[in-house]
Structure formats: C-alpha cells, structure tokens
Length: 101
Image (cartoon, rainbow, N blue to C red; front, top):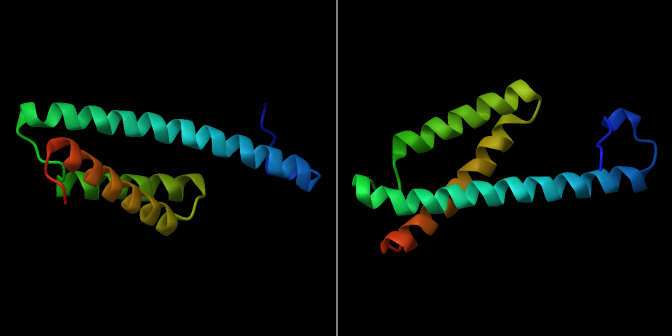
C-alpha cells in the first residue's frame, strides 16, 4: 500500500486503512529491533557487559527525543515510549543472561 499524506485522505475508512498499514510497518520494525536486542544478549557476555548500561540507555533516550522533535512527533511521548520499551528489553536480556530482575 502506498501511503498518502494525511491531508490527502478524504474518508475515515481510508484513514483507518493507512493507520493499520502504519501499525504493521511499526510492528515489523520493532520486531527487527527486538532481534537486535536478542543478539546483544548473545554478544554481551563475551564482552563482559551487563544487560543495563545506563549511559547507553540515556544516550538512546536523548537521541529518540531529539529525532522525535525533529520529525514533528511529541518528544516527551517518544521518550516515555522508548523508556518503557528499553526497560522491557533489558528485562528480556537479563532473562537470557540468567539474571532475572
């Protein structure tokens, strides 16, 4: 499906189709991100790294907030969403590393 700019959509039915398509794309990207986190959990033990690296967490959150602001997405919401996702992914890594939180 080729997405149209929101201003070019004239019916709620068409708008909902596009939102559904965007949701599918977002899930696909988040799934790929999760696969990268799973790989990180495999690589970290060999490098002596823990699941949580606080400086990296803050760096990611700062970058996401800046990118959201640049792209016109609510930066505070983006930071909150990523903070939740990061916490869940760290817990996932801890389980793989045998260090349940």
